[in-house]
Length: 291
Image 1 (cartoon, rainbow, N blue to C red):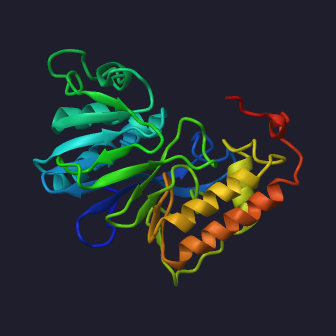
Image 2: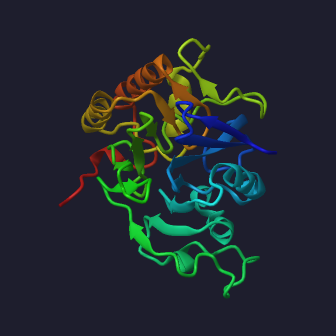
């Protein structure tokens, strides 16, 4: 399966690299009982003689991803961003580094790329290792990751309150694109064909109940019963502050135009409801962070 490339903005500056897969109950991206097709999404930002790749995808998509990068990156040097310590973001770092000149790795874990990202047994730890000499920096809140070698274009790292602690969002001002991590990932399709873009005029049957199931029955089980004031305020500030024309989640269709506001409002409607619901498992609503 070759996947799909969407040129965000149409100027060859930001590409969504999308690879469909069927949900079977084994995938951590969605609740156990959800069925249908979703995608593993990566973002490739291109500027002059350099490119920045956010996420590297699952091993099963290695050849399709490398083919996409061959077409889009060519002989440019490349930085890779591992926005979260999960296989969905890390699996193809080694084969990418073996093929392309990777000059920087941005990580959430303080470990050299040759150690942290070199976990696939078919790749030997020897002089053929493209990760061996790759430098790294830790991703931090407010970090501005250089897209071009001069650093005139950047991907801004965002940390809204609605996220898992090790995750980061991102914003590309050049194409007005928001990378929303594992939020807005709940839209599924019946086949691998998609469509994998929801535009302003496209039909969208998403409901707050669907969002509740996708979040509360998976990694956001702690939302029911939690204090939502800071979470909702953080999201509202983000969408008020940034000019967003396209949203790229980790999984599922991209959102564009009026579809963004509709999905954001549905999410906010669910968060209002979640605050009144009983906690699942433990009373996470009672937890308080300390300085």
